[in-house]
Every structure is written in structure tokens, then in C-alpha cells.
Length: 404
Image (tube, rainbow, N blue to C red):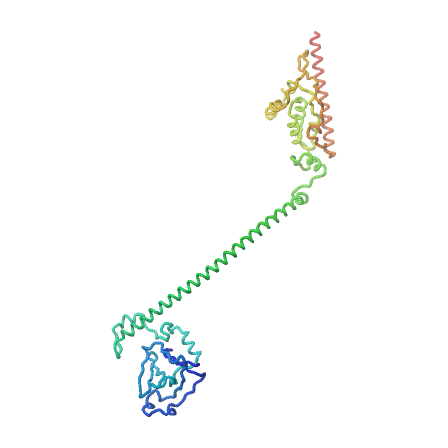
């Protein structure tokens, strides 16, 4: 099929075949008066019409004139005499040689900005206010009211059709976008699950890595000093007291005085809570020669010999003394009544070592702790001897007084 159109695409002739050849109208045996018409003065295309035939985009813009039994159609838009047709022959037409036959050129015309998809032709550029300014103009062949109504009807129908097409496109687009959004929601939910899984897995791996790296950092970290074997063995019996290499450091006099006070309170006040004594021993440095080694439970006194000493002015000891007295079981104490001063008698308490009473803690194995214990033992023995010597001296003086 081949297409022949006028310059404005208003008239379109659909012919059979693929090519057409120009012929001289004089070879067609036409009457002389027909050959004298301006249309037949130049070569023409004899075309056998296809099923589509001849289409007129805007019939109102086409003019038809007759000469004998031939009808010649002219496009009023581009003023081209397009074709001539015998009245008694509907299959053959004679097309002007000015018609456009190039398919590419025709496609370019249809893609141009001047082509109207509503009226299916190329329109000229006019002023937007042309209708308001020329509403009273009439064609020479009569009133154009019917033509204007026809144009308005075309415009209305076209807009309705385009509106329906637009709504259909919007509906399809909305459905497509809704489907895309639903798919996106499912994908996002799945991605969220995967992301939470990765976060939990990463957190578990991080915690596991920190747990494995903690012992290594406590041993090999340059910011933490290494502990020797003696400190490790001593801290195994007392995990609450974390000490470093204090054995190599000198102990000041204030610490020594505080620890000696604790030892004296232990000897002079056997009714004191053993838990407090043990807690004070734990607070002491590892290298000090202090005790708590001897638990003088054998001596029970109503009043401590050192109650008026400097050590009893400590507020913490005065606060803890009633608690220690309340926690101690009620036991009968024997005192000597013939002397002017109270002398404690030995009670029937069974003597238990520190290992049995204090949860059977194992003795320190470090040489430094053994040396400290031996020094504390010597110091405690000296204090006991001084204590007994004071008692016996006081007893002798009492006897002398009674003798006199």
C-alpha cells in the first residue's frame, strides 16, 4: 500500500501497490474540454484505491468542482488540487503530481508541532484571540455557523475521549504504582528482618569477642601493671581487696599506727566482733606487720584496760562496740573480787584456730605473707607478755596494800 497526501495532510489517498508512475493525461483518451482544465495540464498519478480509499480529515475544508463526468477535489487549507475522480468509477483516481508520496516526509509532518491530533491536519499559526476578533466573518458561500458547530462538536468529543483515556491511564498508573508500593513494602519488611538479624549477630559477636579479649587484656595490656606470684596467691584468699606491688613500697607511720591500734583493740577487747577484725585485716596492706593472728577469745573483761586510751576516741569503734556486744552470746564471766581491779579469768571456751572459725581459709603461701605473719606473731607475743606483766604487777601492789 502507498499513501499520497496533500501538503497539510487533510486529504489522504490510499492506493494499492508499492510504486506509482507519472503519466501524461493526453494518453488517457480524455475529452478535449476535460484536458483543457488546469488540473490536467501537468502529469498525474493513476491510482487504484485500496480498501481505505480516500479519507478527508476535515471535509469542510475540501472543495469539489465538476467538469463533465469528473469531480476535482481541492484542499482549502493548502490550496492544492489533490485528485480527480470519475463519477461512475469508485476504484480509480487521478492524483496530482504535487502530492507527497515519501513516507518519511509524511511521518515528519505528523510529528511536527503544527500537526493537530484533534483535527488530523497541519494548522497554520494564528492569534489566540482570532475567534473573538472575527466572530462576524462569513464565507462567500454562506453562513459558517454549521461549520463552527461541527468544529465545537469535534472538540467536545475529542476532549471527552481524551478525558476518559486520561482517567484510564491514571487508573492503570495508580494500580501499577500501588502494586509497586506493595512489593516495596514486602521488600522493606524483609530487608528490615535481615538488618535486625545482622545487628543482633554483630552484637553477639562483639560481646563474645570482648569476653574472650578480657583475660588477654588483663595480662598483656601495657596500661595495667603485671602482678607477681606472691600477690596472686594472696589475692586468691581475698578477692574483694585488689592490690598491686605494694610490698616494694615503704609504709608510712600513719598506716603503722593505725594497724597497731587495730592489734591493741583485738587483744584488749576480745568481745569485739570477729567479723570486724577480719574486715580490718583485709583492709591492711600486705607488707605491714599487723595481726589479727591471735584471736584472744580466752580473755573476757567487763571493761577494757585501754578504754581510756587514745585509740578508743575513734568514732567508728564506739559505734560498732554496742553491735558487737549485742551479737555476742550471753555467757557467764568470772572475775576476781579480792583485788581492787578487775582481772579476767580464763573461760571454758574452746580454742579454735583462724582456719576453723574464719571459714577455714587457707593460709597465705607467699613468702612475704609468711614473714609478715611471723613478725605479727612476735609483736603479739610481746604485747601479751606486757599485758600479763602489767596484771601481775598490779596484783602485787594490791597485796602490799592489803598487807599494810
